[in-house]
Image 1: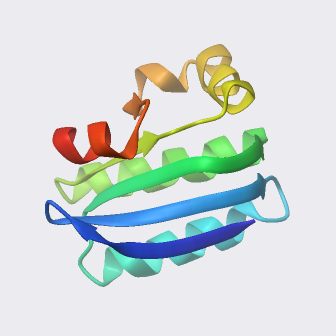
Image 2: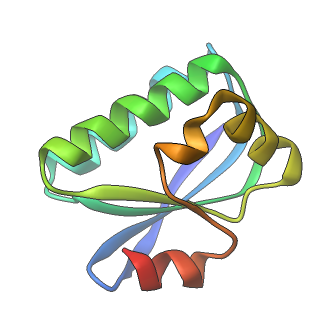
Length: 111
């Protein structure tokens, strides 16, 4: 899995996540995002178009980040998910907890 900072837009940190987010890689995702949040980035748009797979450990890491941002009056919006990844969010009910949109542009408009 790769987590890359790709810039800022509308005062939001823009990131791209690709590969597989599972029990092995999710802690790295969480550590990286926690550092960016600690650096003052409280509005995050995550482009997940390159994310091929997410496990329950990956869902948990995203939830931990979303909760941390909520405490800081921030938020994360997930964008561009492949259908199989989006299904995992729907089945788990996470789509009701964390904003999910079709495109990065839509996320920027909602952040």
